Image 1 (cartoon, rainbow, N blue to C red):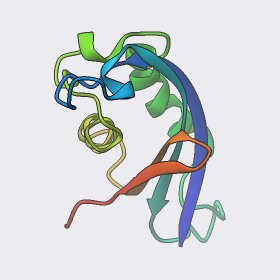
Image 2: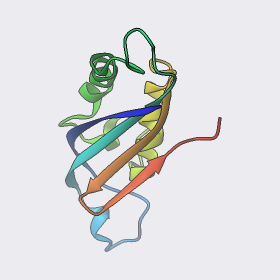
Image 3: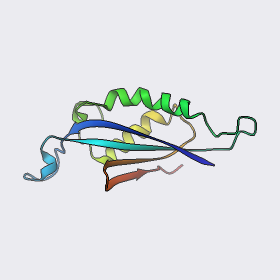
Length: 119
């Protein structure tokens, strides 16, 4: 069974490797929307795959590093594309959430990335 929990965070960034004149080369911000998917067996006694509170607690440790920060100043996010941000989040959450299955990260209501590395 697969469950998910959704979060938002606000960050500024710029993309240093896009061509001169590209709008994303300038500093700008996003309200990112993040959905974390966890996949596992349903506990027959508890009736859930995982406590949503545990999922939230794991995210809070990462959120504090991203929310209201300039992403370019964070080690590993010097080129903070949505793709790099999703992989960065995955690398930090997966050790805390072994059942983490995939991440969806939107940088706008109409654009984002789905990250699910091969097992």
